[in-house]
Each structure stands twice: as structure tokens, then as C-alpha cells.
Image (cartoon, rainbow, N blue to C red; front, side, top):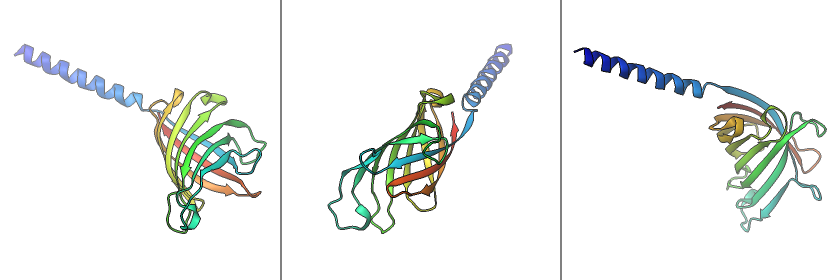
Length: 171
């Protein structure tokens, strides 16, 4: 009988240890606030269309763009550069509202998260706030999960786009 209670106590301790160690491993949530600056104008373009749509659908359905945009602390072009937003964005909407499937990495090159990255998947539009899924990361963001709320800030001058990000990352 003593063996039975000893076995149960050991099993209970093991389950408690596993449960608390798992909870501690994913206990950290970080809020990031930054701006993505995109320039579609040559000669210093950070985004280009690599496949033009051959359909007559509105908005360029089927076009594919790639980008290596700037991540900045602020909404002005002279704010501190903290990394790059690198990815691909095919246009996926047949409706008149333009929408893209965004597959991107935020690569941090300065500050506390230098050398780390976040992987994001989203449906992006230029209208209103958009929620984007954070599906992974590297460095300090290894095993990251979370979301970002984005707001289109500006499209001026023509060909320059600024998008504000508020990201919430569990890692």
C-alpha cells in the first residue's frame, strides 16, 4: 500500500512540474509599436510588382509584389530605422476592394531585438484597421505567437505608404 501512495505522489509531482514549467516558458508578452515605410517609386523603390495581372478584373487580381520596406520607430522618414519588413504580397481579391495575402518577416536590426525576427501572415487592405497573425519568430522571439493591429497612416507623397503597427507577441 505504501508503494501505491508513493507512486501516486511521484506522479502528481511530475505532472505539477511539467505544468508549471510549460506555463513559465510562454509567460512573456511584448508590445511592439513601429511603422512600416514603403516606397513604390524608382530609383529607390522598396516594393516592386514582379508579376502583372493578365486579367481584366478590378484592382489587379493576380499581381504579385515583393518588398523590403523600412521599419521605423516613427511615422516620419527621419525617425530611427530599427529593421526591415521583407516579404511577398499577391493580390487576392476579385472585388473592387483591393486586398493582398501578406507573407512577411519583420527583421530587427537595431535596439533590444537586434538579430530577431517575427513571421506574419495576413490579409492586407488599405481601408481601416487590419488584424495580422504572428505565426513564429527567431532570436528573442523564438516560438512567437500573437497578433498585430495595423492602421494605414499615409499615402503621401504618391507612391509612399506608411502603416502603423501595434504588435502583441507571446514568446
